[in-house]
Image (cartoon, rainbow over all chains, first blue to last red; front, side, top):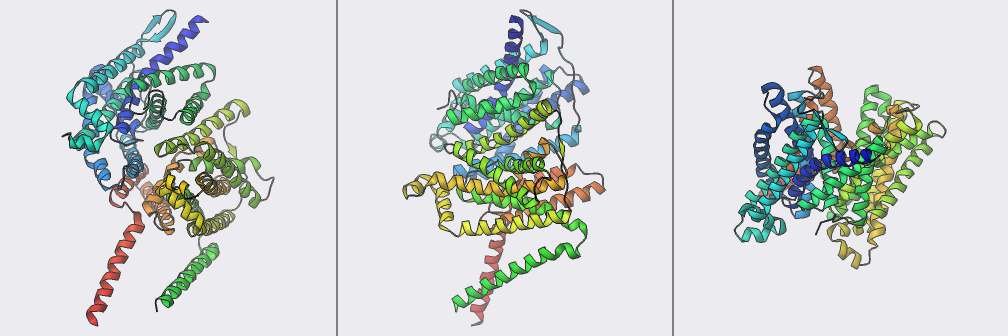
Length: 289
Length: 325
C-alpha cells in the first residue's frame, strides 16, 4: 500500500516537471508578449520530432540534441514574432483586440506547423528507447529516463528563473511584462524584447518536447493535448509567475497520476474540472497578481 | 429624392432576398443530389457562424463553446432517435443547448477576455472526455448509429433553421436589445451604469446563440448516421465559426454568411481536387495558409474589402458625374 502511494506520488512529480517546463513557456508568451499561443504544443511536437530524427538517423544522444533543438526552435519563434505577431500587434486597434487576434493567428499557425510535420514525418506514431533501464526508489520502480528528464526540467526551470532575475535582459523582460509603454520609454527595445520572449517560450516548449520524446511515443497531432495541459497549469499557478508554473505543474502531475491510478479514463476530465473550478474560484491562480 | 432612393433600394433588397429564398426552396427539384448534401454542410457552418456572431460579435467575448452546443444537439437527437417527430427532436436539441448555455453563462459572468475563451474551450473537452468515459465504462459501447432521414429533409430542416436564425439575428441587431449588446462590447461598466441589466442581456444572448447551434446539431446527426463523442464534440467546430466570422467580417450581417460559405466550399473544393492527385493531406495546410493570410491582410474580413472597393467605385462614378456637369 505504502509503495503504491509512493509509486503514484513519484509518477506525478516526474510528469509534473515536464508540465511545469512547458507551462513556463506559455506563461512567458502570454504574460509578456500577450499572445495566447494555441500553437504552443506544436513547438513541443517539433522539439520531440527533431530529437527523434537526430537520434534515429544520426545516432545523436537525445540529451545532446537539447542543445541543437533549443536554438533552432528559438530562432523560429523569434522570427515568427518579428514578422507575423508583431505586424498583428501594430494593426490591432487595442491590446484587448490583439489578444483575440493573436489567439486566432496562433490557431492558424497550428494548422500549418502540424501539417508540415505530417508531410515531413508522416502521421504515424514514433518512438525510440533511451535510458529505459529500471531504477528503484524506496520500492517504487521507474525508468531511468523519467528521472533524467525531471532533473533536466528542474535545471532548465531554475536556470531560466535566474536568467530573468539576475541578467539585464531578464530585467528588460520583466519591465516589458509590467508596462510595455513605459519600458519602451526607459530605453527598452520593446519589439526586440517581445520577440525574444516569444522565442524563449517556443524554446522551452521545444526543450520540453525533446524531454517528452525520451519517455513516451510521439506523433504530429500530439500538440493540442500539451497546449491544453500547459494552459491549465498556467491558470493554476497564475499567469506570468514561474514559481507558480512549477507549483501548478506538480499539482497537475499529482492529480493526473492519482486519477490515472483510480480511473484512467477520467484523467482529462479531472484536469478540466480542476481547471474550471479554479477559474471560477480564483481566476488569477495561486501565485497570480 | 433621397427617401425615394432609400425605399426603392430597400424593396430591391427585399425582392432579391425573396428571390434567393425561392431559389433555395425549389433547388432540390432541379439540381443533382450532390447539391443538397453540399448545401446542407454549407448551411451547417453558416448557422454555427452566424449564431456565434450573434453573441460574440457585438460583445467581443470570444466563445469557444460552439462545439459543445453543437454536440449536445447531436447527442440529444441520437438519444431521442425515432421516438419523436423530427421538428420536435430539433427543438429539444436546441433547448438542451439553450439550458446548458444558461448554466455556463451564469457561471462564467465574472470571467473576462481570454479567460472566458479558455473556459468555454474547456467545456467542449470536458463533455467530450466525460461522455467518452461514460460510453466506454458505463454503457460499454462507443458510438451509436442514428436512424437516418432523407438528404432532402435534412436540407429543408437546415434551410428553416437558417431563415429563422437570420431573422432573429436581424431583429436582435436592429433592436434596443442589440444596442445594449453593442454597448456591453464597447464598455461593460458604462453599459451597466446606464441601466442595462448586463448579466441578463449577456446570458440570454449566449443562450439564444446556443439554441441554434443545438438545433443544427440535432439535424446534422441524422445525416452523419454514425456518432461518437469525438465526432460530436470535435474541437475544430469551436474554432471554425470564429475563423469564418472573422474571415467574412462581422461588420455586416451577411459577413459571417459569406465567410462560412466561402470556407466550406473551399474545403470541399480542396478535398475533392487534391484527392484526385493523391494530395488529400495538403488541404489542411492550404487551409492554414489561407487563414493566416486572412488574419494578416483582411483585418475587417471580406466585407471590409467589399465595402472598400464599393466606396472607391462610388467615389469614381460620382467624380465622373461632377466632371460632366
